[in-house]
Image (tube, rainbow, N blue to C red; front, side, top):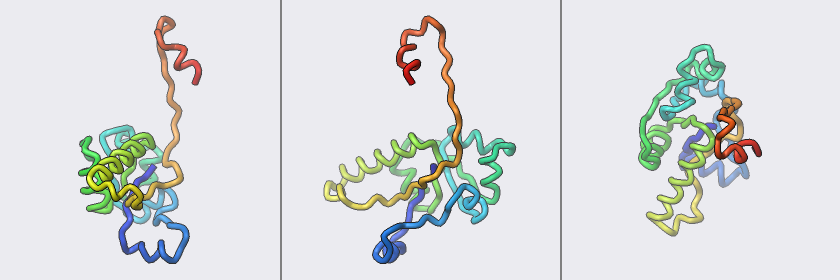
Amino acid sequence: MILTAFYTANLTAFLTLNTFTLPINNIRDIGRKGYTWCTQVNAVDNITNDPTEELSKALVGSTKKVVNTSDTINFMNNYVIGKNYLFIAEKPLIDIWLYKAYVKKVAFNPNDVLSDCPFAVTDWSLLTTSIAFAYSKKFTYTFLFDKA
């Protein structure tokens, strides 16, 4: 999933169109158009360090910035909004960061409850992988995992 910020110059588009179109339609657009993107030290970082991975190949031509921080607001302000970087991460991480940014924004100014979110999220995936869990037969919580 990719998170990006869009600028007030797009206000005209919002006033004249009922939909917003991101400038990227797939992962290859990021490399082809030479975007700079950022991620945390995580699975995306690991996968894109391997030149044999399809995701890594698709991003050729782009610039990668790895950031090691847990400060959601400063990260988004500095890189996604401030430098117009794309943020590539696992969907749960992006969801958490968006929620934290919203909570902090509303805590700072309660009148912002209904204001627009300054971020746009793609509706397509960059990478889908399977995850497996292994545990012993004596594992206490097998009933939780076996239901999934």
